[in-house]
Length: 411
Image (cartoon, rainbow, N blue to C red):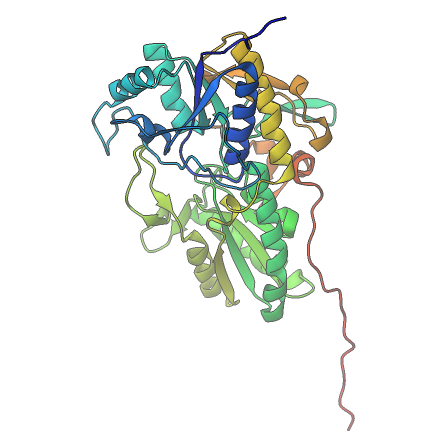
């Protein structure tokens, strides 16, 4: 009988970087549990790559209770880039190498999007550090090479931990907004996270949004005029004179005064990966609708709501399934890879045999496919609806179905 576990005496460290999602703690817990089962001592690196700079900031997760249902990341996060950038031209990769040696880290698992895992890929390619990436993004635009089986054909799509929980939050929020919107017979423009891709914006139609704008389609002057026509028609034809329009924060909107396409920024400051902070496009579009159409419109920013709260059930099982694939990578010492879902499947079919491992150099960003969005209708297609139904169930909407008889005064 073997007395020691396969990786006894080895240490695996986990870090999470970039924006938080409700699924990161679940990812940390699932990876920690599998690594411990294999015999690894498991460390947690605090604040992403920042925790491996200077003297380091590392904690021991091996035998600690860990709540994977609680959203966010207990290891904290930052947008630290160890390699030179415009904001910080210093190359700090040597500090990372030094601390990996000091803390005797044998394998590093990086939970993040294209930025965090892009830096991990560089560490692997440049210095041979054994790394495994773990996908994470609320925007769902990290290329996972997943396949959506639809009407007998296969289409490339994306599925990242964090997106299912964010999608459910937007679905519920949109459904709730109908009550206030109908009470005032308004048009409401709901702003949703999505710097370069409209994946999360599309989830608002599952809560009853009737139109949507995504970053993949630039709103030129001609398209803007067409959009206003569609808005007026849909609003006037709506039974309750109420319309909700979901808008990605990164939509390029025609600025009539400047005569150019603009994006709206909440701050001009850039992070270490060169990204500004978006925010406010919903108010701009709502104001333009009111001016052009004479219909009362309001902007509503969903902000950090999709990032917040507990890990939704689909995400919980998704992170567990991808952690199962990490066991396979560890056993084969197959580094520089990232576990992904090979197939888009419903909750009951989230199993390791539907996963794959892709080279971290093949990650990159993946925008919303053309066959998921109809630019002429400003709405998402049946194919996207089929894709998302696998993840968050059927569309739903709060609705007070009434038709009061009109009273005519008697002479």
